[in-house]
Each structure stands twice: as C-alpha cells, then as structure tokens.
Picture 1 (cartoon, helix red, strand yellow):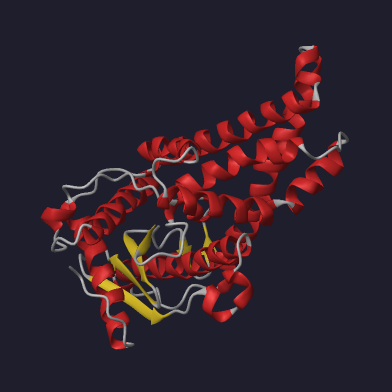
Picture 2 (cartoon, rainbow, N blue to C red):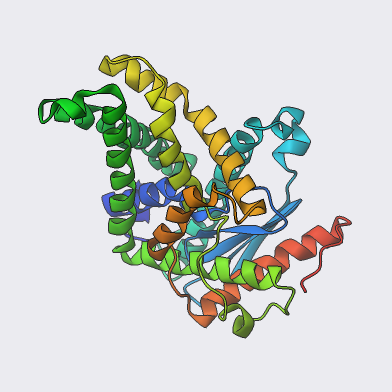
Length: 338
C-alpha cells in the first residue's frame, strides 16, 4: 500500500482488494483459542497476546519497529456466559476478530507513515473509519455469498447429473466439498499476492516464536527458527474444522428449498463456531484422540497459510511477544519469557 493508493481519502481498487483479502483471512491468521500466549499476523508485523494484554509490532519501510500495546481482558472474564461450552468459542472468535481489525488498522497506518513523510503535500493522519469499514462490510457479504450461497446453489445444480447427488445427505456432502474447495482456492490465490505472501511469512514467524516460548527455551531468533511453522491451534485449523462440521450439521436440516437452506446456514454460524472451538480445544488436550483426525487438514492447509520467515520477521514477532509479556507483568501477571 502506498500514497497513490491512499491519499486524501482515496482508496484504489488494489488497496481495497488487499484490505478485503486480509480481513477475509483474519480467522486464518489468529490462534483461534484463549491460550497462555497466542498471536496473529498483520501487514509487515505480528500481534501477540498474553492472557490480559496484547502488543502489535510492525516494521516500517524505514526498518524501524513500532508497537502498540494495551491491556485486554478475556471475553470470558467480562461476560460470564462466554465461560460456557459453545458460547466461549463465539466470544473468543468475536474478540479475536475485533482485535485483529485494530491490529490490521495499526499496521496499515504504520506502513503508510514513512511514505507520507517523504511527500510534502501529504499529511500523515489516522485512516478514516470508512476506509476499514468498507472492506469489512464487503468481506462479511462476500463470506455469506462464497461459503453459504454459492455452495448451496452449485450443489443443487448438480442434482441433475446423477440421482445419487440429488439425495439430501449426498447433496450436503457435495455442498461441503464445494465450500472447502472455495476456501482452499481463495487461500492459494491470495498466497500468490506479494503482500499476502509477506503476511503468511509473518504468520510463520508468529508460530515459530509461540513454539519457542512454549518450549521453555530462551526466545531468540536462532531458537525460534528451529521450530516448524505448523501449529495445531492456528485459525486455519479452526476454519477447516468449521467447514467439515457443516456437513453433518446441515444434513440434519430438513429444508430443501434454496432460500430456507441459506437462511438456516447463516443462522447456524454461531453454533458451528462454538462446536468447532470445543473440538479443537479437546483435540489439543487429547492429541491421541479420534478428534485429532478432524484437525489434521488444518495442519495441511498451513502449508499455504504459513511460510518460512526471514530472521528480521522472526525478530518482529519476538518484539511483539516481549511487549505483550512486559505489559502482562506490569499488571501483576507472573508470566516470564523462558
């Protein structure tokens, strides 16, 4: 993103599409669970969370690392309902998306700052709300169209190919396969964009640093680079589990008309989110259980959504972790970087 793409309140189609893509992939970039330490990739940086604080670290075009850090209570501590099974998954994802939008906004402003300084006619100022709101609204509508409307429509179109595909259960299976195919295709083509590939590298850096922290070894660039970029708590796994669960859940819905099918699928989003969270949570605590089979495709998809980071990218992730941990300790937390 540069001054030609955002100047005087103007957003170019290319910049709009990049923001839209980044918003669509926010669930893929975040850890997907309330944990001791988790993170999320943003534009040229990483956001790291401790239990009650977060820190976003972004490397500006000049090479300087800038940060934004704030205390942050968990949803389950602010509202008791989000301590309950199913509800806690919805609360966790809502907060992660909200925090992800704040981090994405900060990273976008940081990326623009140096460019605007070099231009005498350009004044550095916060990005207007509508610049983020536009792609956000478009992303929500696109999510419904891509993952609810299109799969139902295409599955129904295939009814005439074979009597087997016209059956309710088999039609739901085909719909699920189409939904997963759309997700994988979207992620793959996004990875071909230079900006998104850079974000996937920061995603890999975030995973490596979290693994390094969890290993209780000193958190350094050298140590972090020894770990894999594939993490079981990644939001990629969360999305894939959601897609898989829609097949048996939607198969139980008796509607066959297109409009009721689409409306019920939209209405069931919170339930699918909550159930997916519980499955991932259980699978993480019981690695040898049958449910780990459901989460395995998420690790496979991380071959696309995470890329090996450079040392300077790992350094940014460590900077974010240190900022979050320092704020956590200042609030009385007993977490320390091993």
